[in-house]
Image: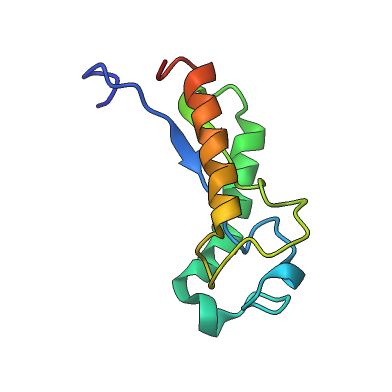
Length: 111
């Protein structure tokens, strides 16, 4: 629909605590996925892993041109990235915003 109407898009897969983040640094999950605290967010753990397989098996799929995968952005961070169960710290939100901004400029979506 966006293409049909001349709207440029960028779809972003955001980081979540249950995927490629060392929960030892999470202030509320205490090193393990906690169903009571995460509720439906716990599904990210499985959904993101499954989607990762889709991405790897289809690296040149048409939808990849307007897709930015930030799911692993916190993978190597050795500090708290969340202020509660799922919301980012200011520093991590800034890191995400910079990555999105750079992608928008590099792909000439804005300019």
